[in-house]
Length: 221
Image (spheres, rainbow, N blue to C red):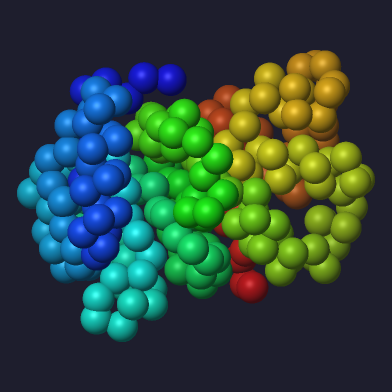
């Protein structure tokens, strides 16, 4: 999937990692319009440049805890729908849930040590820039486990739980079918069943469907 021409903002306090990401992204044909090292500078860069997608680290100055995610939420408030791909060493569930639940589209959350290769990262970058989702399976697992006691979730079959997790990762119907070694038609039937059991509105917009499910899974957690 090509990232050529995408305008990107990078928010990472480590100069080495920031420059490495910039080099990787630019070598792939995208354009880095700003490189910043803290949350306020990131929000300002988003407002100024209106990038196609931003790459944001969770841990930023001054506390090195969750400033990046809070800045991402503020950037989405100031520039509604601004696509953001979060990179982190861990899952910060509270702010991750808020980011995913705003239903504005174009969100991703990847764990740094689980990004398998450059192609995976660039695929996620393009998917988020296009208004889709890109979630690490561990992020999905931690968000889902908090709501599995809900009656509607317990109504899902084991296979439907697997399909739901893959949906949340941003997989297409074809991607789900390939991952589970089933037909695409079977995947579509499972998805229809899940939407019905979770009492969610059917939609041809995959991104809205995934975000609605994620928002439901983490609502009232």
